[in-house]
Image (tube, rainbow, N blue to C red; front, side, top):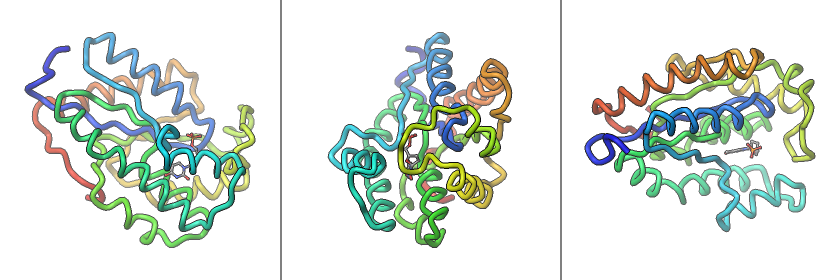
Length: 212
Ligand code: 2DT
């Protein structure tokens, strides 16, 4: 893959409510960048394959109960255990398309009533994304799409709170796309933003840390 050794990859994060289309768009972006011969991988958090990830997975499936602070720290630990691999990949020129990251961590836990600064603290020092793509959809519209599985957070009332938390969290650097549009239209907009970011990173944009 071109540029592999002499320029770094981009850290691109997709955020949004459940059923906003993050997973579909991640795989479309992966194919798109692969088609352009970029070195690229698609990641997601939680990563349910690790030991910590298995604890998270059983919590989400309502098979175990955990204190709100405890599960928050597990989600964060699940990112920390992938941090060094993430940095190695980026520095070796691989772009990472990541489905959910620290912003989901803060949005979901603060939606339960936890203090937002407390929620952010364990994320300090993780790699900062080069681009955050927010797939914006009203909670009611997302719910209409159906296919909420039976997992813990997949309820309209809670998704409304998460949407509110995302509004507080997002800053001017986030790129928002109307996720109510047809998939192809959303993809078209995302492609442009992603390509732009990949190019900026290839040109030497510095890899930084949260929260900056
Ligand atoms: P998926 O349905 O996308 O697998 O997400 N979540 C996720 C948190 O509460 N904190 C986090 O740090 C992350 C990454 C969002 C599973 C659910 O886990 C929530 C939905």
